[in-house]
Length: 443
Image 1: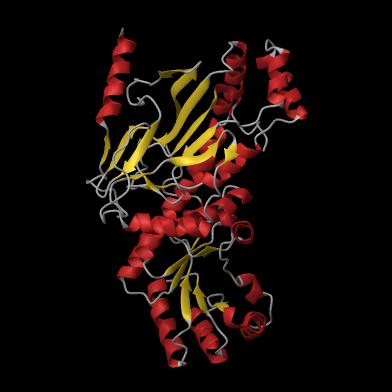
Image 2: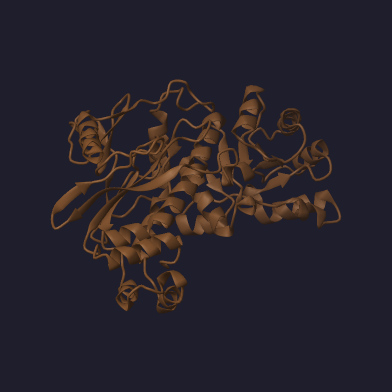
C-alpha cells in the first residue's frame, strides 16, 4: 500500500521529526468525531478492515521516494530521511472499536501508538478510510430501521464518487443493516449477498415486453424479478402474473409507488402469486420509505442507491486525528489542545459502555468490566506491526451492529435529531488529568 496516499504536510512533518531527532519518540494519536452530523444521533463505526490492510501493507517504493526527493519542500532534507522512507513499515500498535459499534461525539474509536513518523504519515488515509464507510453504514442503519422486516439492498455504485467507493459503500451498507448489494466486486471480496436481474434496456432490446419477460424467466428461474414500468406498470404486472412461476417478484421504479404497489399486489394475488414480492426503487431514502410504510404500501423490499452510497444528506464527518501523548526514553508526556471549540482531552483513553450511558476514561482505568458491568469498547488489533487476531467477517460485523443498535434508546434511533442526546461522560480521573495539564500550560 503506497505511502503517498497522504497529504504532503504529513510527509513534511515526518521529515521534520527525523531532522529534529524525534524518530525515537512514540506518539499516541486518537481518531474521533468532534460532533455528529445534523439529524444523526449516532455513527456506526466502519472501515476498520481497510485501515488494518493499509497499515500492514504500508511502504514506499523507490520511484515514490525519488519523486519526494525532487519536491522543493524537501530540498533541505538529508539523504538519510529518504533511505529511512524506503525501509519504513508500520511497526506500532492499533487499538479500535469493532466495526458495527454505535459511536458518539468525542469518543475515540481508533488509537494508533507508533514511532512518531509512522503515526503521523497514516493520519490522512485513516481519516478517509474510517469516515466514509462510517457515514454509509450509519445511513444504512437509519434506512433499515424504518424498513423494519422489509429488506433493503444497496444499489448505489453507479452514483458513488468512484468505483472503489462503490465497493466500500456496498460493504459498509451491509454492515449497517442492508441485506446485500448490487455490486458484484463487493460480493466477491467480502462474501456479501448480491442482488439484481435486468434494467429497462433489457426490455427495450426485445421486440415485445412479453418476449423480454420470457427470456429473463428462462435464464433466471426462481430468481426472476421483472422491471414492470418500462411502458405501463399495471399492464407489466398483468403480463408478469400471466407468465406465472418461476418468479421471485417484480420491481417498481417510477410513478406513485404507494398506489402502484396496491394495484400490483392485487394483480399478483388474483393470479395466485401471493408469495411473489414487490421491490421498490427510484431515488429512495429513509424519509420516503417512512412515508411508504406509514401509508401501508405492500412493498416487500427496497433498493436504495444514490442517497445511500453517498450519504447524501450528511456527506461528511468532523473526523479528527489528534496527538494525545508522547513517550521518549520511558517517560510519557500528555498533550492536548485547549483552543476554543477544538479542545482535546490528554492521554490515551478507553470507552466504557454501560447499560444507559458511555464513559470516556483513561486507558489505564478499570471500571468493573465483565459480570454484568460495562464493556470496554476499544480493543487491541495490531501490536508491534502484527495483527493479533483475525477481524470479523462483514456478516459477523452486521450482526454485531444489529445487536448494538437494538440496545440504543428509541429516541436515539429516530430519524430526527433527538433533544435527549445519548449520555456520554468523562471519568473523574480523565477530567483531573486534563485540569492538571491545563494548569501546566497556563504556567
